[in-house]
Image (cartoon, rainbow, N blue to C red; front, side, top):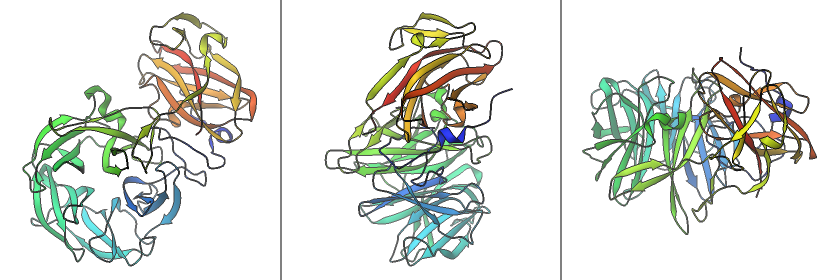
Length: 434
């Protein structure tokens, strides 16, 4: 039986501080609550980014704001009387503000005179011209023409692009993709080429998302290559939006995906990654990093600097653990045989007394066959996968924990699983928070 209890005293964030984007990890807002904005999209107004998505409890649109794409403030529900609205996206085709999403397989549009709050129903329609019902909502703003487009995955396996008229009504179809069973569309435009990213239809299970391209929003769309290694299944995520960050030094393109749990519930997290886009070869690939961030002013992507590292072979070992050579490990050594009664205990781990990132470096032979967990100080077991859905799928797994201030913390690493489940532990890293 896998450990499932959580020691919330260790994981609830403290005061707001510098942080990182960690794909698959649990992200918290500035009040210390888990961010709840699924199937969403981001727009920028002035120097502020706004992230709208649906809350999992009742699919009500909820809005967050951030100056750095890392620290997000919850601005609350945007249409408290609306529920069952999936994948909301923001548009501004005229002087009003609009939210478009899917409700009961209709396009539901909400309108407000203010950007934040006060959204009420404007229309509820099937998508023209054929009155299709649909599932997933995408949104794209073409700055060259100042035109907003609603992207939908319609019936009959059609991904469709419709213009949003200046009056906010859903307008004509401008193009569609008829290449298979795809959904979750998003578009990014680079040097005059439109790249359409879509997911396969596999329910809440991740799959290899694909990219198609066109030199006009009117199509035709061609291509269909993977945006990540096929076996990674888009790093356990499904596309929801593509964000362009235009900085003074470079333009960075960001893939936004949802790391859904098995029911699309409150265990779902987020996978955001920089995209490498080669216009000449018409290719888009995700640039995977376990922790990263982008400077919204310069557009430059950076990665954390290790402040301190604790090697597993120097920790306290118990049970059947054994130290072996490891060519891919930082110290060229790792601890094998970690299991139910075989643990690795790290002592004198430095804490800040508030929220901080730690990266657990370990490998498993099959992430579906078992579960790694930790004990922090005197707390109960914490399943690592409950704090990062990428646990076991990459050698570095970042978690946000709140440790005691000073070199006084003890972290014990263990695992449970089938008889052939094998875990090897490399170490723990602490990072500079700036």
